[in-house]
Image 1 (cartoon, rainbow, N blue to C red):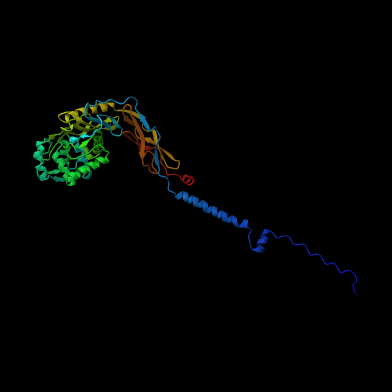
Image 2 (image 1 turned 135 degrees about the horizontal axis):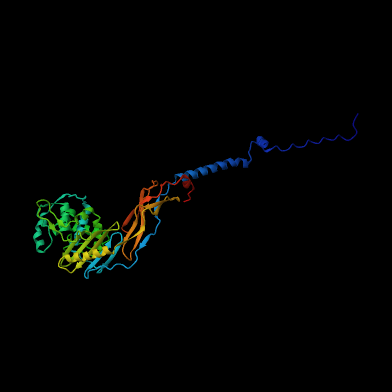
Length: 430
C-alpha cells in the first residue's frame, strides 16, 4: 500500500579521516617540506667552506723568519770627546771605520792634492783590472810617448820611475811604482793602458769620486802634479777607506820600498816612513809647491780583540816635503789609538737577540763571544743585528750576528729552530 507519511531521513555522511602524517603526505604528493630539503645542502656548503679555509691556510706561504735585537740598541761612552793634536796649518781628519769621525781641523775648502791623487788612479784602475793576492797581472808595454816626456818631467822635478820606450812592466810592478815611489810617468801610462787616453781616464776618476760621495773633489790629471786636481781631507778619507777594501791595493801600500824585477835596478825607498809604526799598514804621500805636504794613512789596532781600522788625512802642510804631513799624522795616530776604549755589553752565551718565525714563534740567539764595543769618550755607538736565518736549524748553529760599531759577534741558536707547526699555520690571522 502506498506510504502516506513523511519521507525517510537521509543518513549523515561518515566523519572525514584524520590528516595523514608528514611521511604519508610525502608519499601521496611526492614533495619534501622546504626545511627538510635545505639542511643537507647547508651542511655540504659548510664542509666545502671549512675544507677551503684549511687548504688555503696550508698553501699560503709561511712568513720569512727574521732576527730582532733583545738588548739595548746603542751604547754611550761617558765623558768628553778627546782632543787630538791637530796641526796648526792645512786640514786634517781622523776616522775610525765603523764608528765615524773622531775629529777634524782646518775647514773643508778644496785644496791641491799633489800625489795623493794616485790613490784614485790605482783605485780606478783596479776596479776594471783586479789583481788576486800576490798576482803579478798582465805585462804592459811603455809607449814611446811616455819615454819622450821623461826629460821635461825631470826638469820639473817630478817623481819618476824613469820609463823607457817599449819597457815591459807587470801590472803589479806598475802599481807599486805608482804608489810606493809615486811615479808620475807610470800614472800617465796607467791612464793610457786603461782608457786609451788621459782625458778618458780622468773622467773615470771623477765618476768614481762621485760614486764615493767625494763632493769636494775634482781630478784634472792622473798624477796630481797639476794644481787643478783638488780635494779635501774628508774626501780623501772616504777614498782611502774604499781603496783599503781592495786586497791588491792594501798589499801594495804596505811596502816600504819598490823592488824592481830582476835586472831592473836597485830597490828604492818610498816616502811612507810611518809603515810598521803605531800599527800603520798603508798610506800615500804627496808634495808640490802649490799643495804643500799631504799624507793619507791607514792604521790597525787590536782593541780588546776588536780589529779596529783608523783612517786619516793630513793636507796642506807648510813644509818643504811630504815629511811634515807624515810627522803630523804620526802624532794623530798615537793620540787616536790612546783615546780608544771598550765596553762589554753582554758576556759570551748571553741571549741578545731572537729569531721570529712570523707566526708568534721566538727562538733565542746567544752571543758566541762577548759583545764588546769600541769607542771613545762622548761617542754613542749603535748596536744592531744582521742575519738571514733559515726556517730550521740545530741548537748552536750560527745564523746571525750582532754589530756594535766596528765589532761583529756571531750569534748561535739557543735551541732547535723549527718551522711553524700546522696548528699555527691553520690559526694565523694575518
